[in-house]
Length: 226
Ligand SMILES: [Zn+2]
Image 1: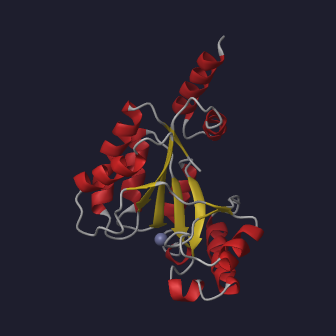
Image 2 (image 1 turned 180 degrees about the horizontal axis):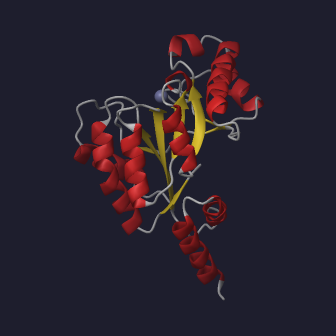
Image 3 (image 1 turned 90 degrees about the vertical axis):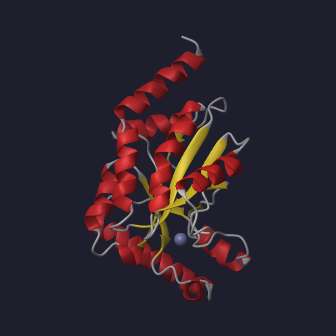
């Protein structure tokens, strides 16, 4: 069996088995193959009652995995939503506990405290979860090296993005605009990490999601988690 055929067989198995844990392993294997284009859908600022369950519905219907960078202080009354994210095989990363830039970026110590609080909030609900994925609120650009290295030295894998629907920066954008933003920013990239949000007020993001997934699927991308 040729390597390519073998890889295809693995991919098919991964897609059929999702959300089984095995699928997670197979997807990780596939990501090492330079011949395969991949896309990671990443959602920041959840969990929320209004958006996250709708995002999860679409992902479930379309059978694709995603990565959620969560806000710790929002978990309290939404434990079931967090459990649903995890149970469906999606990846969960630390985003922040408070998402208050002034507070968390005032010193490396404050930043690490915020991260630790978020981590504790997740583990309280999901004791098995131990991911070291991390995404800076607002992104890494413009932050001091002191802040960035403090997080890195704690062993976190800092996750940025290289494409975006720009839902957080264009509050009046419609689903079609978000779709265009994603395509424009992902153009020519074989490894797409797409930024989206599942915070409050992102109905248009949910609306554009099925079309986005269809686009990447039709163009041969494999959906992965970070
Ligand atoms: Zn955020």
